[in-house]
Image (cartoon, rainbow, N blue to C red; front, side):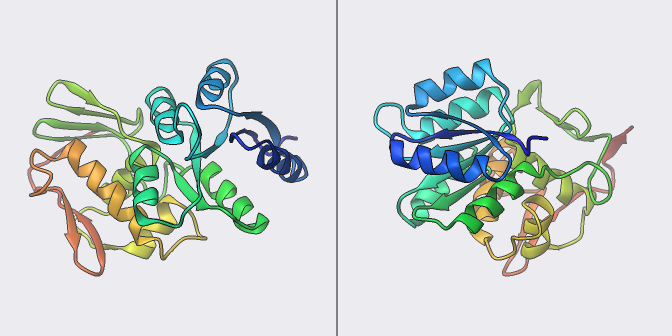
Length: 236
C-alpha cells in the first residue's frame, strides 16, 4: 500500500530524479513538475497528499505557487529553501507552508519532515470540538471554519490546528515545546520561529487589533495562552 502521493516541484532535473528515487524507495507514489504553473495544473488534476516545493524557481516563484495552492487546498506543503535565512523561513510559513527544509539536506531529515507534515493533528483528546462564539468571532472546529463578522476567514491547516489546541487549553499557558509537538509532531520542540510566524498570522485573522490581542496572548519566554472570557458562548 502506498505511503502517500507526493508531488516534487523543482526546476533542477537532478533534484527531481534524486527525490523520485529516494521517495519511491520508501513506498511513496511520486510525480514531479519543473515550474509552479505545471505544479498547479497537476494539483488540480490529481489528488496529492504532500507537495515538496522549491522556493527559488524561475517564472512563478515557490512562494506564489504555495499561496495559490493554499487558497484552494489544505494539502501538506514543505518548502525547500537554499539559504538558512530567517526571512526565507518566515516567508515560507507566511505563504501557508506547513514546514520548510534547507538545502542541502540529508535523507533522514527529509523523510522525518515528510512524515510529520503528513500526520495531521487528529480531532479528539487535546483538541477543541463543536463551536465557539466570541462576539463577532465564530469558530466551528468540526467544519474547520472561522467566521469573523459576516466574512469567512481562511486559516492554513497549521493556523487552525494551533488555534484548536490553544482553545482546548483555554486560559492556561501552553509552552512552546508542547505546542510544537501537538501541532507539528513529536520530532519538534525547538522551532520557536514556527510558532512566532503562525501566531502573528493568526492574530491578523482573528483579532480586531492584532498588535493588541485580546484572545491569543504571549507569555514571554514560555509560550502562549488563549484567553477565553467567562461569558463566552459554546455550541455543540
